[in-house]
Image 1 (tube, rainbow, N blue to C red):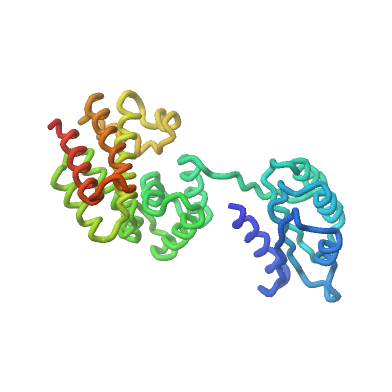
Image 2: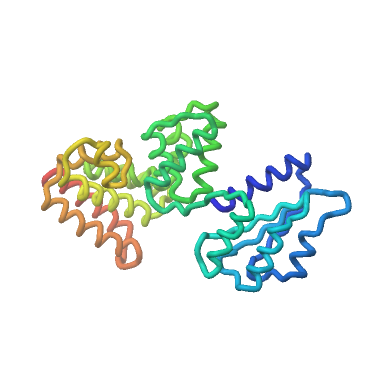
Length: 304
């Protein structure tokens, strides 16, 4: 998010300059001196645009903070000063001081929760003038993972490659080789009690070189989701906020949970907990351990 905000500022500077050849100087805010900053902020003879990016300003010391604040109070024409600040840290007051000087704020709140990533994907598609439903958004997150740069890139690529006709099928088609998609395919079959289908999907995924840890994590996530959803009842949209899950996934998990009892969920939890250690080195044969766990989970779902 921070890099995107900085990139937006650079893009605007280049548009104003009418050229991509705009000098950019980056340095840690805590390392800046009065002399260095004065030199970086000195206007060119021809009034050319220049961008100066001061990073990690929240951790800057008192001297550096004073230098930055003084410079921000009188930025020469043609110079863009970008101060990257977390809003906290020992130089917390600098953020407020820069705002009082009229700084333009580009919010870059850290995204850590599943719901926040869902909102991020929606905003990405909205910026690209594409409306994506919840199934599409979740399929993309399952396929790409949690890295925001990869998510943004995937959104842009999908819109470009499909001429804006983006749906869940398109996501799966374009990301069919991604580990997480295959992992959730295996997990869905396992928690549905499809022993043959789950083991076949697992073997195919393993042949494609999907990481065992990712496949194991997908199985564990499916079991934990059932464990969270099963004791609850009600409208998926109401439960979604409580669980931090998309409504369509709550609805899907509610259907899966019908096959499961409290005892079978508890047994499956033990299976995936053991599997987590097995695929990280505890088992002599991690491939066998994974297939055995998938079979056990599918059998538990089938009431065997």
